[in-house]
Length: 438
Ligand code: URA
Image (tube, rainbow, N blue to C red):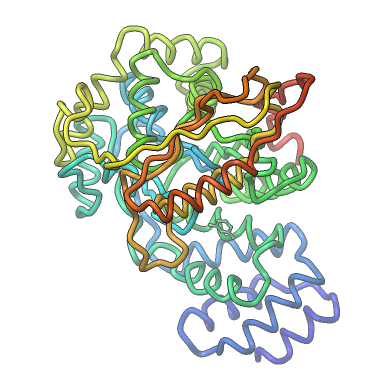
């Protein structure tokens, strides 16, 4: 076998075998296949595509390129959740303590990542003292003791994906369904979950702008998960406007806490409950979504999930007071209100533009080395479909540097469209994809 022949085979539209895909993935991970050949191969995949079997083979080879976490020492079925990424998405911070409050184990490996705001790990570090680096033994012990632990992804988790993703990023080969699906699912499979719920975002603030593309990505990932023996379900959810009111790390943590106190924004609470209900059902903890939903909702109503969050944060080095009273949570030193320039209905709040604005304030990172300002971000005072008057505040910037706030304000003002008529609100959950749909 040699790489030249395999590039040619894919370039000419032929199907690769399992052995050939393993050869490419292992060869590239070990440095025997060079970047220039791998780039050519990825471009061939981009144009010729991969079929279902090739995509599954690619995923399994990438998952097996590093450590495959064994969570069998944790009692019960381990269900993981993954979101393809959206603005203001803090559902993990809400659903994880809800599930743990029902004694359902949440053993989650999360990333930091690049983006408009930090990843779950960055957000959690808004709690002073909170640590996500620990031994595997401690991770397992924490889940068995508290039903919940969130740790940073280990360096050796799907290293092939890390290397290939970095190359895709600079060779214009990111947006291919097989490559995206295999990249996401290789990390999920290596993380050791028995079942997986995928939140595939769709809309202006998502990777997938069109519903049909989001469905195709969802079906591909569900197929991969099921072929790998993990029960997998995907929800296609709206990302035409940010999820919830807060965009930014510490701000999102505060919003997650307010949902657990029963004071949260309704779309955010609803999506968190629905995703968690699906996790319970595919994990075999409940038969019907409606029953699961009610049990989860009661963890909010009775403050059980809030208490569980306090216990969880303390178990990883933080303090209960930061959950109950917001003590020590990072806050930006300056705030600036942004006012509407017209009267009408807020009909289009472009999630990507809100994200860009938050990034400028320091809430996210463009490069791996960038340092996040945990206190920076945007508070949205109105949602799509709300009536607003000229001169009324629609958002608050949280920031440190005046210059950045001016740039962010300009972008944010372009993220809004105010119209005379109210448009119909987009449904939050557009579809549920199971293996029957694949
Ligand atoms: N997220 C990933 O982890 N991989 C991709 O290819 C795209 C998004």
